[in-house]
Amino acid sequence: EAQVTQNPRYLITVTGKKLTVTCSQNMNHEYMSWYRQDPGLGLRQIYYSMNVEVTDKGDVPEGYKVSRKEKRNFPLILESPSPNQTSLYFCASSLSTPASGTSGRASYEQYFGPGTRLTVT
Amino acid sequence: QKEVEQNSGPLSVPEGAIASLNCTYSDRVSQSFFWYRQYSGKSPELIMSIYSNGDKEDGRFTAQLNKASQYVSLLIRDSQPSDSATYLCAAFLGNTGFQKLVFGTGTRLLVSP
Image 1 (cartoon, rainbow over the protein chains, first blue to last red):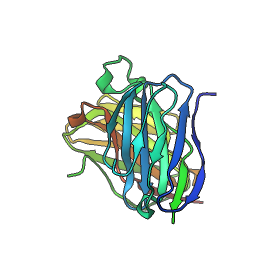
Image 2: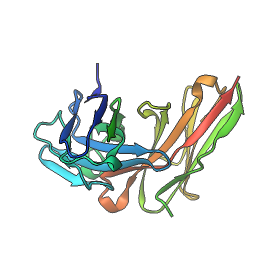
Image 3: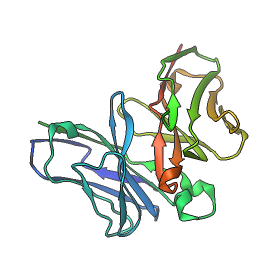
Image 4: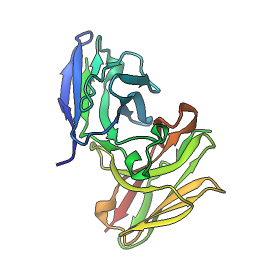
């Protein structure tokens, strides 16, 4: 089954304790992205990756790191979590974007993982 | 102006009616638009994509794109209580080389039995 998976689904942690949220897709997608969703603010992009070893900042990258060493995985790292990072996090992937020049617009459609609800106390 | 704007709602419609959801966009976004449905606490689910001016139909859903007026709409025919959710409009941001997908804040739809 084609899917985007995230782990853990729920996490409660304390300020300053490093954590990693994993994201994996089995669709051979080039593009992967992390979003956070907060009430009243909608979905905001944290980081994205156009392909292996190619990552770039989104709108709210402060306090987060990412890596893309394999095409299927795109982990999100919080090296020193703070309470303002309490949020609902989503990973998403698509075959490509308009920037990649790939033909076939259906390839631009992004599919989301189930989400990770993070609470930092 | 935000790149993609939606009325937060809620939009209330009776069961069986047509629900009309609207989204306006700025010059900074691409001409590829997406509608997602999101139930509370769940992940966004892609419903429709539209790239060309005009209408695109898929079952009970019709997406409409009007480039001249810079808006994109989603019509839901024969609305069901199970359609009650938040609907998100999204487009690629042009000044990032169309690498970033930006979302509206969503319109909440309530379908009453």
